[in-house]
Length: 584
Ligand code: 4NP
Image (cartoon, rainbow, N blue to C red; front, side):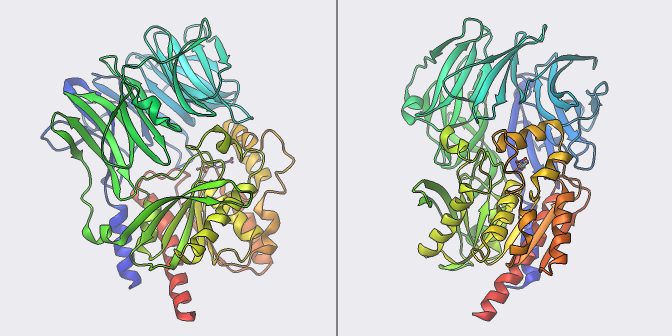
């Protein structure tokens, strides 16, 4: 394969549109969020017509509009990727016109934006921590209150707000907030909150992650009474999910739940299973005589499906070219034994260009409280095009496998979860998938890559570390109040291991080829410590390459951003594969 052809294919891949549904607005039109025309945008969908772009400039996000609304709240970074946001209103009948909603609010990092029609609630980071702001129709701002820790509002109804609060034990607590008085209550419940919605009766619809999976409840924040959610059908209960992708109370009072386990999800309406294509579903809404929902799988780029009287139908989705589809081979889900007998859930995606065994990349997800799913993954797909099989371990700390598995990382980063990643790599060799392994990741995955190359030299042929963490101490100094709390959470409230678990103190161990890729203006995993890492690597005579992505931050919002991050990795891996083939 010629490098020039590969680059052409990668550019085609990153320009493949992806779609999701964000809500149902006035006259039964849909708000579609898409990566299309080179950036994240929102579009108005009307049955049988072309999409109409509503925003003017690329967005960072969109709030779920209330049913029947005639305007949509979008927000975007205004600081070259530093994630300082402003919010805007876009009217569905005035495409391209934006009215600033946050003119009385300084730009700040938004954690949640809740559109209640009349008022909009923004949880954002100020000097005082995570603060809930109520934006009134003329743009006046009321400060509702400050959240005592790392958390944000998830829903508001009838003067009552509900939110989630991350504890240093890993437990995710429910808090409620009286929107008028600001009074805040933290609730003790038997499990972490997986999802919460405020009903009209000031009761909370609650999904709780307990020891035996996710259970569904109604909760009265006044009396503190927790009861089982009574649903007409029991498929959801029998499914016994481990996570919730989406939950809402539909306008006809039915309850929509998208629940998942083993990296796949299913749609339930009033507890009844709605069979559909394999993979994962995102937000869903009542629309016409049925449901509209986002869908994806490892082989299916994100698209929007409608379930009406005639079954499932694709409303908007990209056309996947044959050459791309033909490059993606088998994919699978496995449980791999780790050093201590724990089982690590692992997704694999084979490349028809890699062969078996063939060059393999262990692709490590970020978060760390996140997971690899049977969902479209542009990094994994690009690796398959580059001629690598892909192994995606849901190392301890990952979501979707219970509270206990998720909390096992707390206090021990670059510890047992690194052993899980190494176990997945060794398994890939033993299983006949991998001829040799490379490690690659972004953000926490970049950190894991740096940990692997400096603490386990020789385990991987090479590493690609994107937006990595190399020095917890310096990163803490450079972080905003919310991310300071996040670092404390990852270490379980103790600073004891900050130094020991920082790759910058182990540069002398580096011996495998390393490709560093880092956004210039990253405000979550700042560049400065990585520059110091490189300085040390230069002093010690280590071989590495580095690519600073200009004018972008941690979030990837445009095709240009994807290219800046992905292309250096692809070229590095292309050369590595060529050199390995020549030397064997
Ligand atoms: P992420 O970024 O992996 O994209 O979620 C991170 C930001 C902060 C930390 C880790 C990852 N941290 O541990 O502070």
